[in-house]
Image 1 (cartoon, helix red, strand yellow):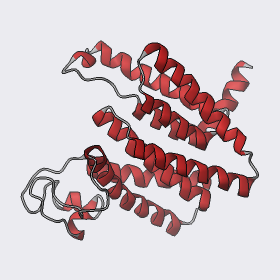
Image 2 (cartoon, rainbow, N blue to C red):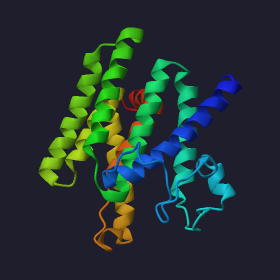
Image 3 (cartoon, rainbow, N blue to C red):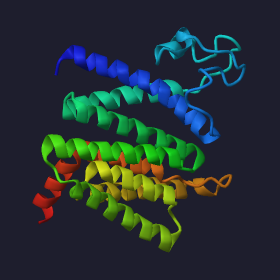
Length: 254
C-alpha cells in the first residue's frame, strides 16, 4: 500500500474524528452540528485552528482549554485517533475507492452511535436516517461495481433486525434503537454476515454484562448497560473478518 496514501487516509481520519466529537457532544443536546463554530463548553470562547488540530492540540495544550484552563475530556483525542486507525485498517482491507469512502463514513457513523448510546443509553433517529442513506448508496455501488444482488443485503438486514426485534419484544432487554442499528449495519454486511454480526454483538454484550453483574455495576446509581457499543464493535469485526470467521466455522464444525 502506498505510504503517501496511507498517511493521507490516517490524517483525514483524525480530522473527521474531530468532527465526530462535535456530533457526539451536540446530537444528544439536539443542537446543530454545523453552527455555532466549535467553542469551549465552559467559557464559550471560540476555538481557533491551534485549539482544534486533531490529537496534537490536546497534547500541546496539556489537555486544558487555552482560555479558561478547563480540563478537556480524553474522549476527544481518543475518538480522533481511533477514527484515523479505523480508516487505515479499512484502507488495508478494501483499498482506496468509492466503496472504501462509503465504508469509512459508515464506520464513523456507528462509532458516533456507539459512543452516544454508551453515554446516554439512547440512539437518535437522525443518525439512523443517515445510516439508511449510506446503506442504500453502498448497495447501489456494490450492484454497479460488483454485480452483487441488493436482495442479499436487504435480506441480511431484515433477518438480523427481525431476530433482535423478537428479543426486544419478548425480553424487554433491548431498545428499538438497537434494532434499527442492527438493520443499518446489516445493509452493509448482507446475508449471512449480518447474522454473524448479531451473534458476535450478543456474545460481547453477554461477556461484559456478566462482568458488570459480578462487580454489581448495574445496580450502582441506576446505570444500565447500553447495547449499541457492542453492536457497533461487532459490525466492525464482521466487516473486517466476517468471511474468515464463517469459513473457519464451516471447516471446524460442518
